[in-house]
Amino acid sequence: MAEQDDIRAMAKRFFDAIEEGDIATMQNSFTPDAEIWHNTDGLVVSPAQTAQTLTGMVARIKDRLYDERRLTAFPGGFVQQHVLKGRRVHDDGEVRLPCAIICKVVDGKITRLDEYFDSAHVAEFRKFANA
Image 1 (cartoon, rainbow, N blue to C red):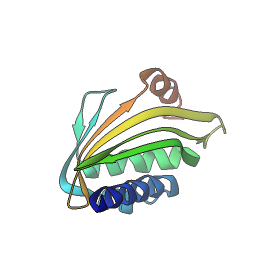
Image 2: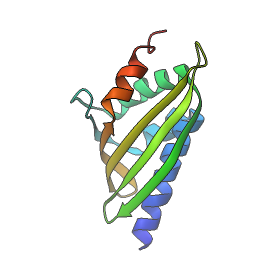
Image 3: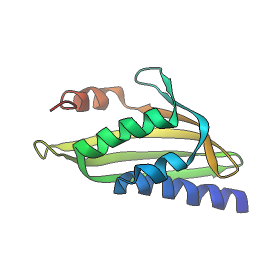
């Protein structure tokens, strides 16, 4: 159970860091060779690429909140369902992105993250991504 408690604490720090715009802490939650997969584009990216993407998200979405967090830890990883909420910086419009994240964790670091966003919500968000 101690391992699962540590995984839960690490997962909370990971998502809290993104809420706060602390990209360095988020990136440090991964092993250097971690793989991050997205269901919306089928790509596997690195922690550095994820940091770049989330830096852009932080610049575009204010008042970020991982709401309705449902975290389940298990030996070697965790699953979290949540709704990413916030406001678009350019027009104060609402952002609402339901998501599920599945992570493999080794020695307190994420080695694999599989991200499942609702594609309809992502399509709506992308309409404003370059505004």
